[in-house]
Length: 365
Image (cartoon, rainbow, N blue to C red):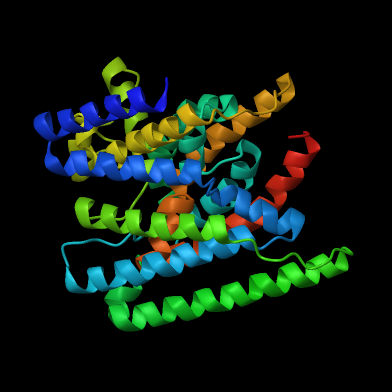
């Protein structure tokens, strides 16, 4: 489908949401379209940025992500401080978080995408990511079924910097920590490159900077309109949960996760009323619009690679639920709204990425 007819279809759907569902959901769908267009158009891949740093000693992608985190925090934290009805992306430090973040970081390199990456690459029509998307949703649902067990292994109360210190100090702490991480990343890239006999790679951040600025603005719009930070994983799990309940494959009434009032209510509503689902659908639409003008291609996979990728996709979904989010829900939204669990997630996921890249190379991806 060409871009103009597709744009017309997306505009009609947005108008239908405005008329039949709500102005908020129509606005969130439009935000999702923007997120999908930026992620796909700028190729702003969280997974790719980490891989560039480790394999090529190129810090450009990670520096773009650090810029995104700083901008998002500078926009979100004052809003959280002035408008208590807005919520932060808080997750409990727990065994679940430690295990989930490590496994997620490992699997996202094999599957070549995190939560948002899987969405926008599926929208671009990349076969592996399109096949992984339903398995990601199934894995997220299975993770939700077992989340109570994992939390019983040990957890602490969520900690939010804005609630603890006020938004001004929380923002200063966050920016200082991000500056320290940026300095460490630059030092590592230079030192590791020199040890490998490579000349220092100049930072090529223009594309990443544009993506960072646009994503920070759109994530802030999501926070204001939805009342909660941008997330991806919850929508996946909800889709699979509704299918399981409708088919009679699972009774969720007594499940620890799905019996909680908010989650139970969403099971009985249309997915179009869920703020995460409607944004996810928008991301798919935005990426599809980008692909209509510039179709994407991918190298064919052999049978072994397909099997490994699909298993990784299932584990990706499962671990994302244990970790209370992916690179968006845990890292971006967690850190930018002051949640300590976001800072715990990053080093565990990065450690997992190192092992995931070894597996990726072993199977020839």
